[in-house]
Length: 251
Image 1 (tube, rainbow, N blue to C red):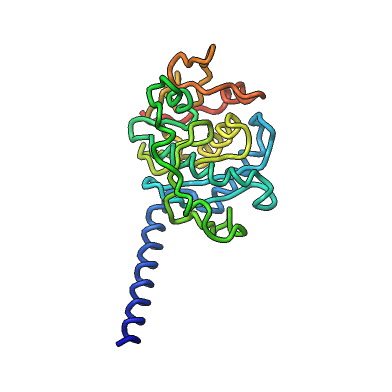
Image 2 (spheres, rainbow, N blue to C red):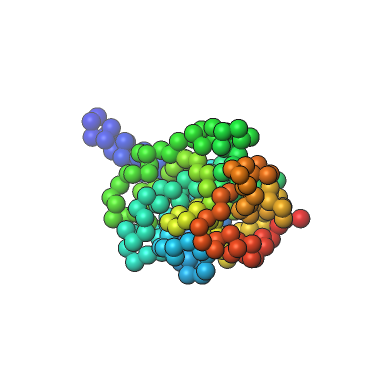
């Protein structure tokens, strides 16, 4: 009986693992895989984005918040800020969690809204990062196909540039991308370029003047005119953002 119980438990565990793998494959099927993510963030980082021209982390999540891929652009996984791995995942989770079929909100759009007196004050504390997911596993696997975050929900809310929702050509939201490792404004520019390359930028509407989820620089004397502004970073990021290729807004 004991042997039969053990065999039964092993079979159940195998079936559960197989079912989870199949579900993950299906939920991430329309999103960039590890190789694609690494390529697009590497290419985007190589362009002029302002900031410090540092290596980056990138994460993609599906619509349910499950991490599909994590990658980095440097030579090793400590060539970019180690803390930015989880921040990139947090940004992806945020952009996905607070965007809809009819409205995209980038993480850059949330900065002013969550400040005291803002329309979304307190949002940044509403969905904490799951630290058991964020810091699990062997650090040697961080940013690889075997990153321990893959297949799990990371959670977290981030309220500065670098996270964008992903929309396919039908206007359906399929998840989000988050990048981190430089100034928050440069992070946004890199995420923007990566999403454009992936052709997942069919944004239905946003809060920016061009009706997209572009970063908004309208803070004056500490107050955002439209309520969704982001601070200007120290370099040329704001000017670069103005000249980025427009999104393919879904009509």
